[in-house]
Length: 367
Image (cartoon, rainbow, N blue to C red; front, side):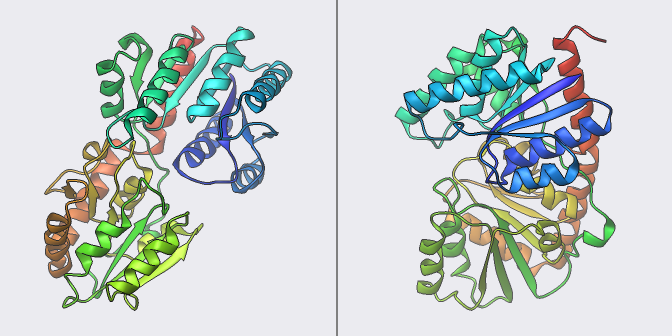
């Protein structure tokens, strides 16, 4: 098969970009011809180049919406697809999914759309959610299959009548495994807490800091990995709460696996998620997880078995969960081992590649 992946941005390396990067690499290793189209050049383009995955930069593909620029983007994508002539187009993220599906339809090329978390689910402003739903509803009819990365998103699509059930299939996010040298030792002390997330309106580092401000008598350190527009505000909050000496801001890092290996507890405190890959990375490392109950989080984290799932914004409950795991090394070890076993059973990357390939082949009518 020849598969053309389309994703909106290349100058970011979030969950969507890593998904496309790993999947295109795996498909080429399996003998398929996978190429990637994305807006701008950046870290994703560099990584794909180092892996031997052909990359095409789309000048006009950007997150911002504008009729003139989007019209140019449509023409650009259509010309590129005509030249590449793929068997199937796999689109990722809302903007790339919208324009990519329209362009592919005009050329008679079947398309797949992977929804990495719907923009109309709980946590989004109402008008914004309605706009996202309208766009997805309009383009769903042009899509051979819609892959949701968690069952929660598949049910949301059915509940809101976005499309019919025969077009939807859930394939959970997954992560390639790592060597034992980058596995965590959750029973060690002092306890190092780590959260890997952008500093944006959808993440909730402030709730985490407020919870930790009530645990100053315990021995812990917090590492925040990631960058984003709200980083400065969170740094100021850490200082105002008297946590400046105990919180480290590392910014964007390529060595996330190594950072997790040095931690004893992983956190993802947020207001909105799809099915976060960072939690799978933590489970892969053998870390216990505390995460907000948003999106498909409960499909990864089993409350009381691999970690704790808390209501968004619940400072008191988060503080109680943190206290339990900071003072009890045995609980961290047990939760971490259970999380690693769950990763091995459900979220290995081979499973994702196999199931995704089956969807592509079913669309093309192949066995």
